[in-house]
Amino acid sequence: MSRHTFRPYAVALGLLWGLPLLLVVVLHLTLPTHVAGGGCEGIGFGCSLAPADAVVLLGMLAAPVLLLIGLVVCVVIAGVGARRDRRERGPVG
Image 1 (cartoon, one colour):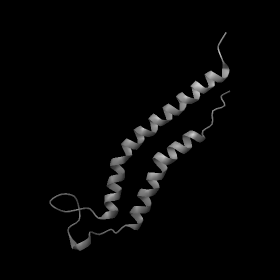
Image 2 (image 1 turned 180 degrees about the vertical axis):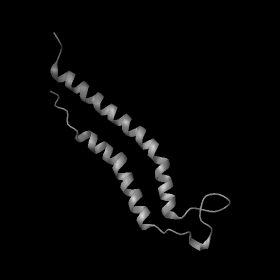
Image 3 (image 1 turned 90 degrees about the horizontal axis):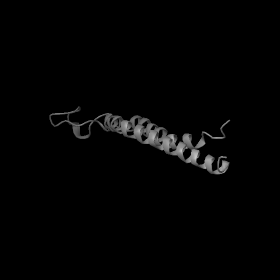
Image 4 (image 1 turned 90 degrees about the vertical axis):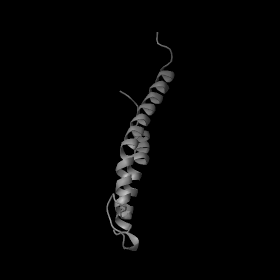
């Protein structure tokens, strides 16, 4: 039976996935939903997104990068744990 704990994974994924998600939700709910100065809203043709919508767009652009980084961090945590277990067991034989 493995002694591995899920705490390092929870901390890493909480920081890489949970914190940005919480930040996007809070900012989307608190930032203005209209463009200041009465400009047109939307993407393209000189228009700009409302701040609340821009946060959602940036969150969607960051999600694939954060997903890959989170998976790499999980692999590194697993590798470090496996190496530590091998050292604790000592030489085989």
